[in-house]
Length: 203
Image 1: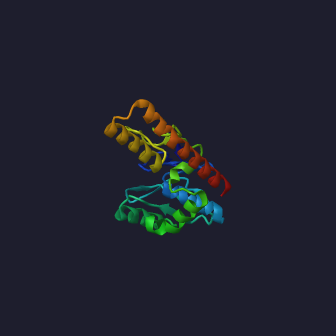
Image 2: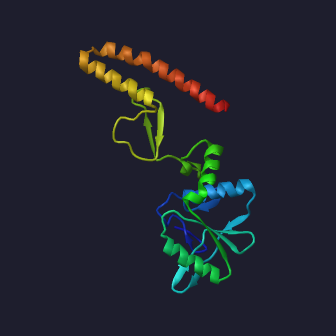
C-alpha cells in the first residue's frame, strides 16, 4: 500500500482507483475529477497532512490557488467533517465540502459522457473480476460480483430460458424438441444483440 503525501491508497471502503493517472479514493472523487478535468478546473491531489487539536486531516484535492480544498464526502459524519474543516480554516485554507446532493449535476455529466452509472468501470485499466457465459445464448458476461446461479445477458434471455424449462417440465418434451425450441429463439436473441451492438457503436 503506497502513500501520497499521507494519503493511504485504498484505505477507505469505497471503490478506488486511478483516472488519467490521478488517484481517486471513491467514485465521488472519480466523478469530480472527470468533471474538473473536462471543465478546466486546475487542481492537485493534496500533498501532506494537516495536524492540530489532536486531529490529523488529509484533504482530497487542492485548487491551483493553493488555499481552496475540495473535500468529497459520502459516509463520514458531519461532526467529524466539521472538526477537520475548522482545523483547515485555522491554517488559512478554505474548505468546500461536496456530498451526494451537491454532486448530482456532476454525476449526471459523467453518466451522460460515458453512457454508464457504474462509475468504477471508468478507472484506468478496469477489468471485471469474473467472466461468465449466458445460460441461454452463451454470450460473454463480465461481472464484479460472483454469481451463484444461472446467469443471463438480458431479461429476454432469462425469459426464453425459463420458458424452455417450463415447457420441458410440463409436457415432458423430448430432448430433441427442446433443443429445436432453444435454437430457434437463440437465433433471434443473437440477431437482436448484434443490432443493439451496431446501434451502440454508431451512437
